[in-house]
Image (tube, rainbow, N blue to C red; front, side, top):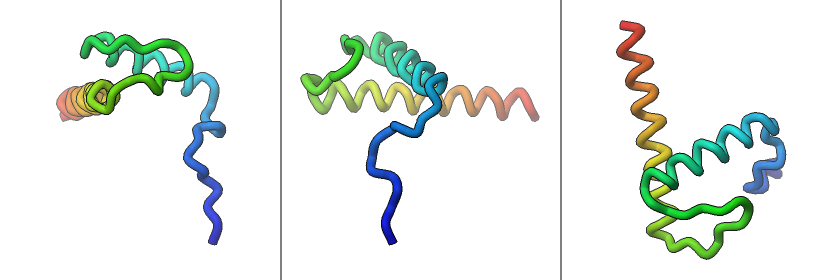
Length: 71
């Protein structure tokens, strides 16, 4: 069975893409990684991982705050 997901984000809603890009830039600034618009293939694995890790950390914190406010 063929998969329709080829690893790209072409199907993403433009507003969602813009929000994710802002979120990524904010996370990069917090960990001291200089991202630029567009291609960032010159980043080291450590830099890219620290940006992704910071994004996950912030998403978990937001979820935990949401749970705490509900209960």
